[in-house]
Length: 470
Ligand code: ARG
Image: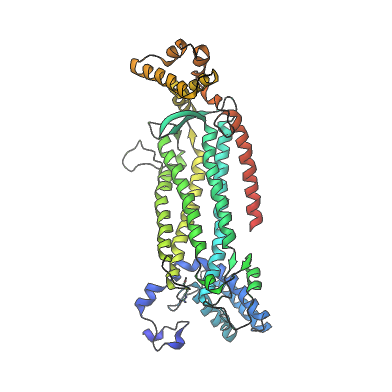
């Protein structure tokens, strides 16, 4: 029975492969999503063969027609696979040969699966990364909209800003939300940067050394839509830097979503109470009727773990491979497919969650209005009155300690301190402290309004870069 399986490479073999080999080495079960990219690259390849005189006009028409037929069959769920189809590339070639006969058998002329796989995979990843960038921009938009609603003017919403998860200084809610937006914009920029290095066609590199046949790697690169062709055929077939880099940018994006998720988990607790989840973006408990759970936020956090696994696992696969192609490289697909799916779904869920989140602005303001939150403002008032900052820090520190230890209102102590007095007490009034942050890029109304404009311009520039990019 083993003899009945006819592999592409059956010529040199007496018997067909063992069932165990087929089961262990196949990639068809997960690489079918490369079909449209393989078809596009295969069409470019046969047009190149035709330009090189390796395919007649008639044969070209037959092979292109067969490739279209395969696409149609696949779209209609009618492309039947057979056991010798190791991967989607093999399946396409087999079916093209069945449809187009001897013309079909010329499809693989001057091509190896090594350059074929690398070319189709790059084409797929290039498009998928553009999709991720556009979804990341959707999340940036959702955050920016919420920042607009929170306001950037004198009566804007504010909350405590934290360091060490201890209340530090009040900040505008818009400022806090936009902090996440800037991180996501760096992710979008990293995607664009990774795509530049990815934008190379390995087609024509063959198994590792090119070919004696008149191929046209420049022409096929252009036909597929790559910026350029490979410079070194051995590098072209064994290079998976684009996979590692894509995994890194996706993982870092996932880590950003995880940190945002952790914050939402905290903000929606009874103890913080800064936000409530919309019913459509929250889950219930099977046993505890009162519960509303932040599962999206938790999974954004949890799935960062698997993204880190995808990245580190693939780096481990790569690290000891000698030049050039090794079958280990087939392990490039599942981690990257997983990372793309995870980040794509995560971005969609987080965008909806942020768009519908209900902020408890009163609760936020109340927490931020603790008089101790204005301690730095008091110290800065002393600095404006001529005290060295270190001394000012000590004066205010002592006032806070007395207030805590003796349970005296801080404002009474501030009033009694000659260098502070009325001006100091004024800083302790609700909502006053956050107004003080005037540094460009800082957390007060003036700079935050300016920042919002900068963000608007950056998003518009990114949107146009990505719509032109494809
Ligand atoms: N499915 C394989 C991959 O993704 C195809 C390449 C097989 N090449 C080979 N020389 N056996 O890497």
